Image 1 (cartoon, rainbow, N blue to C red):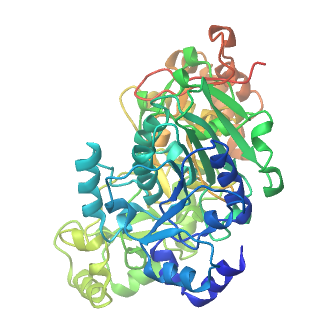
Image 2 (image 1 turned 180 degrees about the vertical axis):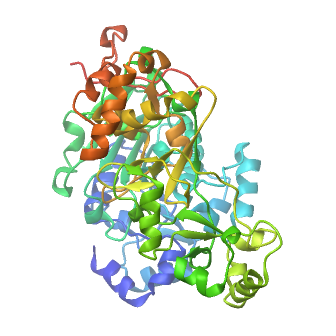
Length: 535
């Protein structure tokens, strides 16, 4: 961090910086990106999120490229103008996402890191994109992806683009459009993941990477690099990538984060199907105000609520500490007076419940983001106890629970609802998710954030690869029952469970002659593959 950044951080409150998604570029990262841009040897450079001019500062003293910038925040621009040296740049105060009609020789950018839903001018931006580019952005798109899509449309022929990005878009649904644009004409050279993200952005909670896009060249494939430390960033492109995928094998709808994992499994598609063949995971109940809806038994008694006005519910992930959760386990939560009841009034509330509802209104719970859109505000989503639960967040392996209780669950877990095909395979799937092989394959679908944080959305799990019915039918029923019993005692599946699933990782690399890496992905029942580096 430079002295200019440090001074600004001390002067401007965090609330202002957070509202605009301001995370300033580390000098080492800025130098790497600018150097790569200048290797093209032509054209000026534009920075769509100028901020404090980190990329301008990274320009060599003898560089003759004209540098321009856009910056929506008058406060940061004023601070830069008041503190920067006399070295010039045409930095305009303008909203880049609303300023169209220009082309730029080269583009370098560290865009705002914020959810698109938080944009104050969101609707105007959506309308502009639809008018100028012919498509409407997903409501889940983050601001950085919107910046990148616009910049790709404005890059002059023969120019280079270097973008810092939160890499979650590589594993999300809204990211499919971004990935499709990146590889449409084979100009994407590489994506560099910064494993040292805390050195780059100490306050960021997402994984961070650099997009390198050269419109002057067409590449056979995309190289995926990992940088362990900033000291190795300058020379990263000179070494071998973690993996390399031919453009023809890259599916924009697939998850790309596994390309950064050099020890990911080769998936045998002949023995796998998408999980949605057996059913689907559903998000847990979103109350919008857990402080009101999640009750301790003692509080429910104090309020005089009837048994039909509360429902057993798992309200926090920490309430389940073993792979199996039974009614006996739930009763233990109630005996410890944990928040294990859900205020759930489906009909006419009693006088006691009505009094509690009035209390909630007085406390402002009825005006929360989710509650104010419900009618009545205190009604909660209809759910059922699900036989399998998967934790939403994890750092050292996801939590898989065989739920044998009557308890519902809040959003700390996704719940699996089996269909007709899947009803008889619930225990099979539980053992698969618990096995080492299953964890390796299912984790390919997770979204990876900073500080080793992983997250599953329901559809990430629904498109994950699991054993085919033929594979599961081959498991002897008595051995499966034995494995479940042993797992109840030890908390982990017995070692022989791995032999049931190890064939799922035996892909045939010979089928792909010229591919160094091919990542499998099966979504909507289509084959998903990854061919690891074979050279």
